[in-house]
Length: 150
Image 1: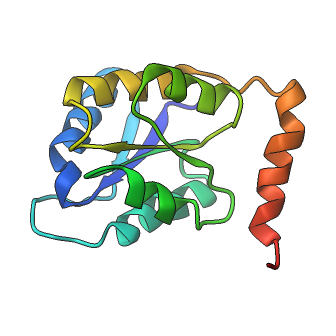
Image 2: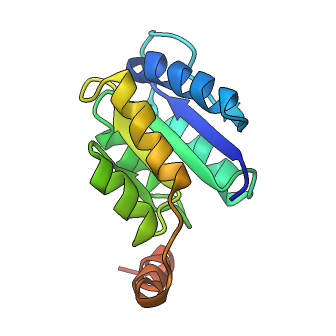
Image 3: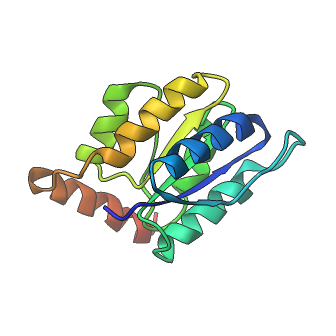
């Protein structure tokens, strides 16, 4: 997989985002930082949009979003066509969302998990390949929902 990652956070996730950037840059990744860069209150949907737009433009294969709980970022990201974002708090979820769901964004909560745990989960996420096969039909169903008229 291409060694590029796009990343963003809201005001609650800045410390985790900075640690993730440092970690992945040391590992040889090109990391594009879409902010935010401080602890002043910002609107997480804006930052989710920046990452999702970059993925839609194929500027990177995977993205990372961090907010207080990860919930808001995951909800905002999943509103974007072609984005399969997963909120992860444990290793099994971080692996399986790539392996079975072909997720392209991991969302994490800086108030829920430690910096060390976020790094471990992000490592698993970016280093796990999608299995394909029996999962292709389900991922295709998810993709079809992008154009559903409900």
